[in-house]
Image (cartoon, rainbow, N blue to C red; front, side):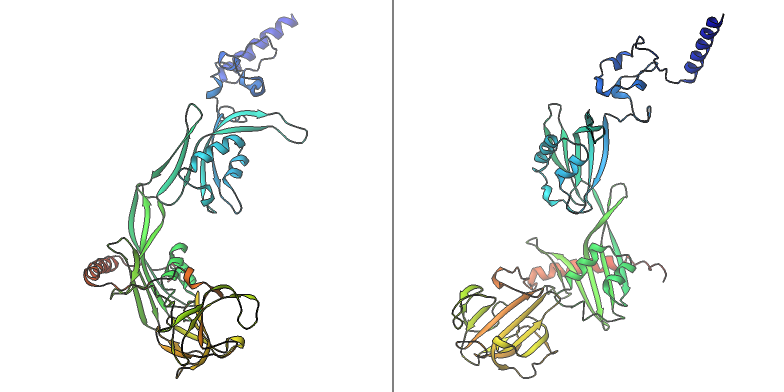
Length: 451
């Protein structure tokens, strides 16, 4: 009687479980798994996979059985400092061999060394197996890459996909961009950067703004409280309206002590893009490589046997042999930082042109009238005269170009040209400038929050 009672209860319990859709756990090996699971390899088998009306294993998802890892997973990886593409992939579980093959295919369209901090990788991974745990490690799934995409810039995405034969194909997908004009302006209290951030100017645009004006303004010394800036730049979105970032600066303006300097972006007939004043003068100012007339180079930049010291020594400038008293010109506009005696240089002048470049002039006989520390000079202005003061064997000018405080080989510096537009090119620029001015007027800048 007791045995019959247990059997009836078991049947009732089974009916209740079936009606509720719960998974039936096989109590003994005599109950066979559904056909879709029977062929699964032993390491991936799980008792919870044996269920009523079970689907094949490839369609079982973690939503159906929460603890079961799916056979295909998607991940987004972010590049951090010192990361490599190989390291990112293997840390995500990709086998080293598969990661190598995927990177080799990707390299045909995008160089992995060009990865930048903050870039993201989107991965579709297919699970291979779960490795057997060792003494000090737990189970770990390994994967092959089904698909990998990297946004190389705002407009382009590098993509690789795995073919059925296991090989990878690579291509570049170009995104459709929608470009709108954005205007920002503000008053500078302490720095242009803080004023720009307060006006919601993107950081890359601020960096570009500083670069554009770097040959006219020293942002550490020339900016004063109350100076102003105004800017119009491209704001980029995809075809669905999602903002992707900022493009080119179209108009840039800074007012120093009430005096405005406005620059316009212009692409020439030859395809060169630069920024110009309203009169067609390039914002880029050249530094003269030869600040003296009628002279010859007597010693170039590099290692040489010093004519006085008698041993090989690095010569960090260019020497121009010329008669005593030959005028020496300023290599570019700027402020005189040093004008006086300077050891082996003899009588010496150093001019600060901007926050990046300086020029220096040594062995001078004397200085031109009015030349002293703190004085502003124009490019081509006479600042001194050739001499042989200091450690020198004869009359010559020692000329140096310094970049960020270090003497550089002038012949290897990619110095800007300072182009002046003329004729038809100037007329074409003026038409483009008028169009930009109209767009600027039709697009008022938003009032920053808190004002």
